[in-house]
Length: 345
Image 1 (cartoon, one colour):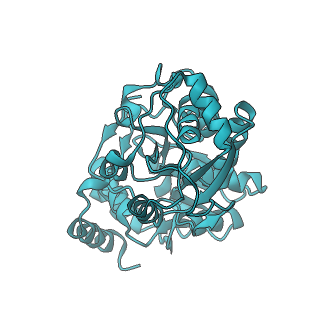
Image 2 (cartoon, rainbow, N blue to C red):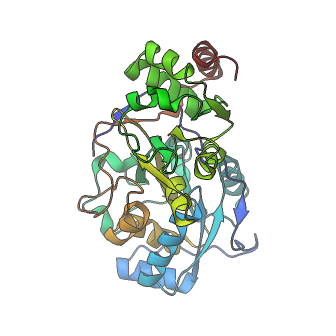
């Protein structure tokens, strides 16, 4: 999958409070040795270690699928999941610096963070390296992109808009006025989306969107919940996991991915200071496998890092968030644009 990169912010799209689902062990654990033998030897060592601590931004609707699929293949390695958001990098860096027990594998929403800690990551050299797409390496041999997913999505309440939406111009229909939900907090990722829409759809489009009398929400989760409840009718910002979680709860919501579109990615790597390095290597290799890619990307959750994953998305040509250029002054510029197009919400 070839994705055009744009100078756009990434950050954590889901503002999730840290939730420790299973304890990650004490700082007194003895570090196991990295096995240099065959892959069968690595798996045997991982089985002996018996568990792997996963820090992840993935919501439970996705992480539960991954854990279940992993345990079908590796029933002797328990997965301890710590789910969080923007606080995870600092936590991992502290654990690396102090040498304390904590994350064995990190899945995080800013791939560029992994470039900064690449020297503290284990090599990825399992059997599923074969067939992995070159474009899905963040750091060759150390950091993978296990999923890429849309964030510019049209999501609507099917009771309010039974005919649905197909493209960006549908949001300018007279029937949408007063029923449109937009995000108000200009975070790094939303600054990127404003720049994307201005560039791809034009300033006149954004001005027209602002004239639709939108209702504003601080983030995508409450905004999509408002769609589900019928408080508003449609929005332009979401992720497949948010939509599918609402649908699983019986909410009357549907979605479409308009073209052009903007996408986000998660990266994953195994921490070199891990107390369970072989289990970490086994888990990271699993993420690259057909089974792992199906668990995280099938059913429309995202675009895969290897070919032939049934039910994964095709996001070829979509622009990918790039957090590296969004300095504070760039975000301030985006806030000024937001005020210009939508007023001080």
